[in-house]
Length: 178
Image: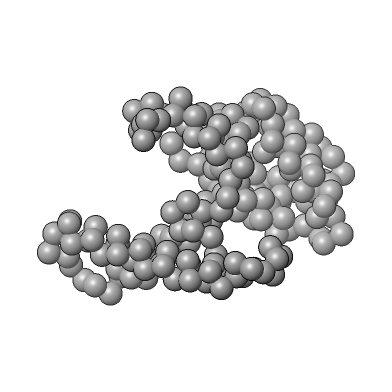
C-alpha cells in the first residue's frame, strides 16, 4: 500500500491559491481529507470543484485528482490513526539524514555493516537532538527550537488508541505485547 503525505498534497494544491483565499480553500479541502469514507471525500472534492473557489482554482482540483489513488489509502484508516499518519515529514527527515551518512561510504562488506552504520547514525542524531532539547528544557514551549526525538517523533495525543488500531489493521506486523 502506498499513501501520499496529506500535508504535502495540501501544500501542493495550495501553491496555486492566492493568499486572500487560502483559509477558505483550506477549509474546503479539509472536508475532503477529513471525510469518513472515500465516497464522502469524492463528494466533498466534487462540491469544491463546482464551487466558485473550485472554478477560480481548477489546478487545485487537478492536483487532488492526479493524487487520488495515492491519497485514498489514508481514508481507510480510523480518525485516531489518521492523526498519526497524515504526514511523512519525520520519516523523510530521518531518511535524508541517513542517506547523507551512507552515500559516500561506497560498498559495505556485509548487510550487518550497513545496519550498524545506520544504527550508529540514528544514535548520533538522537544524541544531538537530546542535547538541544536539554538546552531548551526551561524555556516556554513557544521559545524552544530543539527538534523532537528521531524515533518517536513529536508527541502524539491518543497514541495508545492509534497503536491499537494499527495492531488491528496489521496483526502480522505489530505485536501489541511489546
